[in-house]
Image (tube, rainbow, N blue to C red; front, side):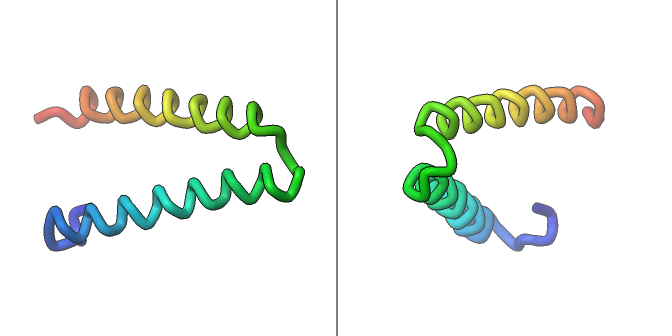
Length: 63
């Protein structure tokens, strides 16, 4: 994040990444590789994990 010049650039990258994630989730269901419940629960599991790791990182690197 430090290499991106501003909030606008970070927003563009975030939107692009979110769109890629949603398209991958849709493709997994469309191709019949996973059930929709698998994709939803996997996404929730990942979101919770990222939230926990993000909060731990803030506590460890607090100045």
